[in-house]
Length: 518
Length: 98
Image (cartoon, rainbow over all chains, first blue to last red; front, side, top):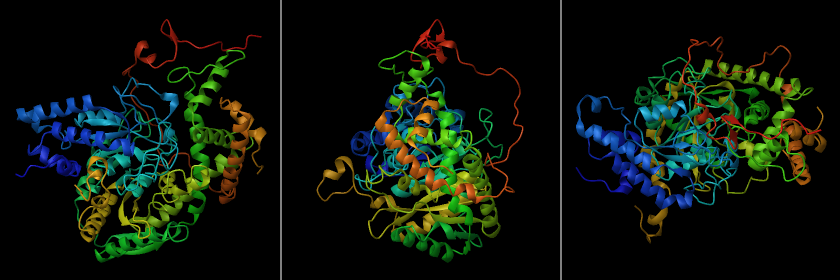
């Protein structure tokens, strides 16, 4: 057995790492240390991590190694992913590490409890490498709204890694972690996946417990996997999914055929629907080209391509920007300087609790969070409620009906994940509306509660940056996405001669070696 | 639908307990006017016959057994509080002095 150096080790997929750990060709401490070394080497450039959890991660890794070395029933009972490290979006609460939600208002706060998904990671004995950067309270599409500075795209450090889960996507793309957890309210797992050349899955609403994910918009939020391969996301969703009595919206369906679906290996006879409204005008030419290429590959593999129309999608973005801020204004009312986090006292005048709350929230929240709270307060206020929030909820029904009609004609739907490749840092920061348009193709899935997967579709000709392909399936049919996604991934990788991320530029100390690549 | 103006934003900021400077109110009013204008079409999208959807996956009557589960100790609950006193959250006056 040839021994892998650290650079090769960190490039293995989670499934490959799991196999090598099970075969005892490598230890979890070696793997975890290799990732911690990589973080130390490149995160100064990428800024994907807000907190690195080295001590605990190595302790968990050592525990897994000891169990494996001892053998017997306990070793047999280890989860397949035991010892495979993971990064966690800093919107998900964890005992023993700070949770900031990317906001000053929670700086230094430690949760007294673990999110359900964290309990599941701990039960599977997956070392948690640390907490990843995000737009404040997951509000944004570029990670520039983090109070702790932007994360940079590993493909081009002057560009955004998408958002809000730019930290998780960049960490996986930069080989700082093999897996990560994200949250997706309007595209925050899928759009960062698209622009960083990684895989991101938003499961069916309720397929993964939201308990312990700091709520942004409760009827839209969903925790899901971030990875470098489709199979890895399937493996991770099976770890974190399942019914949770602590989340009343959690589904009782099993979702236990995802890994098997990813290993199916064919799409013969499947009907794949192109959504007429989600490509063409407004989509970058290079995005459109890669999208068309994926359609050709699926057709060659035996899938039938049909066109479907979802006429009400033109209202989706508007309805989303009424429903989401309405729920935000309610969910974020709890950050008031009383029970946790920051408290700021007014500089002068009477010291009442209301004035303390107003001063605390003024100092603790960033501009985008304030914009959304004000917008939501407006949409819910007397006299506007029916016209805004009420109408938006009706649009939600229309979007669901569009999907119902589309899924009567196709097994899965396909579109580009985002209309463009990664834009430059700062480019859209002063234009909230332009920023919101990044999520035009991802929002409908959240509105309808259906699953959506983004996988790398290649590089755009004009800028050499990653393009994402989005697959959508009916609610509870997450397995279909893993099946089609894994087939498309293997067809594309065959064409590229390897994974897309092999084409990403070198980072850290390896990038300074003249002409070298490792 | 009426456009959103600076006075509206000032009122909403008071309701939402967010102190805003004059400069912030000006900027926020301009930005929100653009956003509100862009979402206006939503109110014309659906007729009266379309029911509202508040939750993406219909579930009803989600119950669990009424048994005492894990609860935090007062110490745990207060662990992140900016100020506390004798096992309670401590806050400034909740009523104006006058």
